Length: 576
Image (cartoon, rainbow, N blue to C red; front, side, top):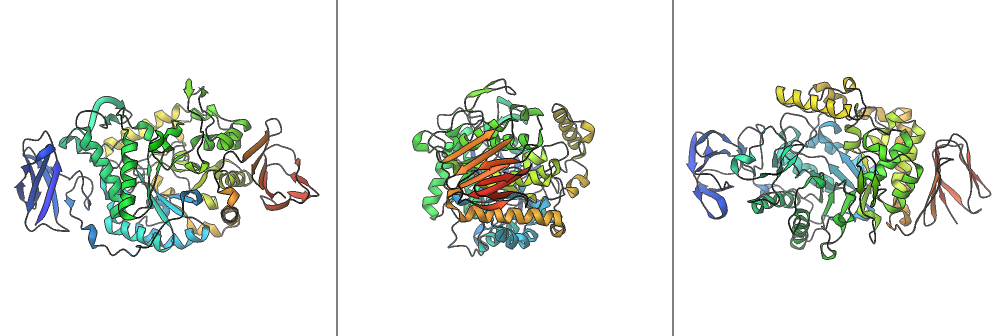
């Protein structure tokens, strides 16, 4: 006997179909329908019939979609998995080194099981947290995962529910925490059957994806419950150590208790129940520190948020790119402000947005923010999916890494970045023909607005776009890649061995720079990082007893307190 439940408040009748038999469900309180069906158990396939209309459609809370997003759901017994991580606890977020990866392109096979083989490498590199791009079910065999539709079901091509549990368990065995990217601001168009069940979307707000997810309109209580239950499921049933919330600025919610506050409060309650600590990290372009303030202090209770301003300031200085939203950045002063104040736009006018943007960060540690030179968005949403190592020389790529790992933020890197991977990370999907055509045309129009040639944009529906985005692990042994990998290893080790680099104090972070001479010096207590982006050697005086910890090339010298940096170089100095 297995209990089936589904929320369908407007339905006249609901049935659960198993094989060729439709079992009628009884209406319960709150718009829920229920039925206990004999013979159904773990491994049984089923689907729901709404109002007598065939074909039957998947369960909105399906735990497994073995035949794709249009196929039947399958019952999963989460209690049957043999976990071995009862005593596991991750390192604090303030000490984290986060590695963002995409299961489908991380290895040639693109599965959870094969990805496990590289966990010793990540541990040896110094990574503490692995952040998975979305892994719940989406249409087609490959994609980024942000057009997913079955939020409770791990993608079958990656290995399904059991494969994901094996991966998380193996990460914990290797001393690696695991974060999951979840998308609650929209769902993909193909295989999205939620509207057939209830008011999961609202006409109150229009978004780039159509009607907004219903977080505040009639029926929103159960919709919010749906997403909160999803978040808790990943933490409880799959043992994830935290979540990354995609594009929270796209949450359309004017409720007195914002959805993020509700979610963070429920995560804290789960902590009390399990004795584990979880982190919830938001992606937001609002530049609003309220997201990471505690609920008691009037905030939303997120543990951290991504810091795009640091990325934009860093990349524009290194590459000279001023297209699209990069037009709001580009000066050494912007980079300096991002290092000292987190947000460049903290209540000042932003020309690209043509409005006042942001709010100052006050009274918060910098480890509430993630800093990075690359991530899936900033690489994959370029016309050709170029990494920073494709856009600048190796010396400037080393400078980018040096600032990421010595900045006051929590550092994050994107798969393959550490060895300057030659593979791009391009946008790819495997939609049905007509939808695929519309998606490809839409991206070309979007990128044309950036001033990029639409003809340069790879076809997202071409399988080669997916295949060329896969990492080539064998190239690590080639000199140029091995040199970059060694640089990253040393930077991570340096960060871990110097507490002043992880204390997150913005008050103790000092920055000096020259716009004309193109240099910047970042000081973190007794550590100073000096970069020279100018065309001429830079001489800087430091205490005579100072010593060099790391330099990007052997032409950088320090003698009798005189530091000399060649163009496009960085030195990390221990002051004394």
